[in-house]
Length: 170
Image 1 (cartoon, one colour):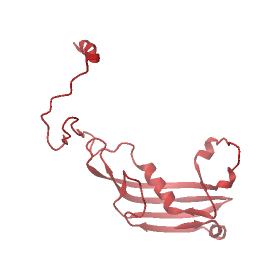
Image 2: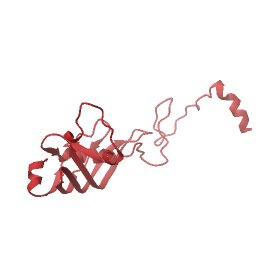
Image 3: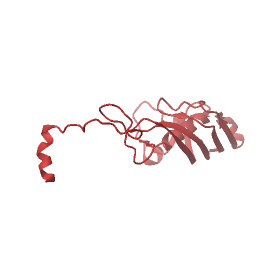
Image 4: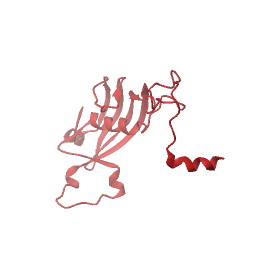
């Protein structure tokens, strides 16, 4: 859905979007598994577009330790501000202050709602996803998922340079 600045000049826009899985590309490490439901409004405040609303979906990720797939629910409120890129587009370098770090920029006559929703989903995902807090991960030698079956591999040998530190435990 394209949010046109000229339409917002006349009246605010109330949106209720349902985006089927696969409609938004979240990259190679994540994929949308449930319909994305987004509701809210867009309005023009001076020359800024203000998006306010709520989104809800589930994203498929891989566990950072055992690589098993897991579903990560995303359910969040958002309030975003976008300014025209011309406000900072200059030939010289421009310093951005703290207030401008919270503002996005749009180019042309508006912005695409799906891009803003994608950004919010990606920001809500954990940096390191785990299938469970006590995930034992993969064996570094045979690759067996240690949550499913324990392996009989010997523990990794301690490098000689650390042998002196083992004395401190005694």
